[in-house]
Image 1 (cartoon, one colour):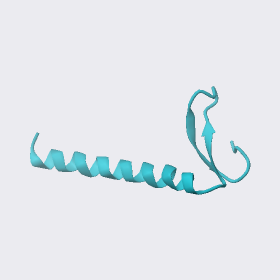
Image 2 (tube, one colour; image 1 turned 60 degrees about the horizontal axis):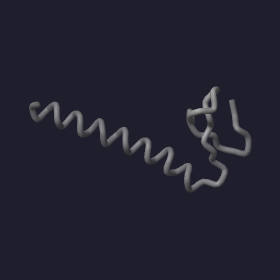
Image 3 (spheres, one colour; image 1 turned 60 degrees about the vertical axis):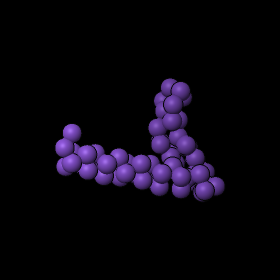
Length: 55
């Protein structure tokens, strides 16, 4: 793997991990933030801000 490919993969991994950490880590600190389960209820599909579970 050449340097350009390794650099691109590293930047992509850093961006994805940073985004996930920002969204889900920020949700852990917010008392109004809840994880929203998927339709089957076996996995979570995102986060909801507020008291309701949302759509």
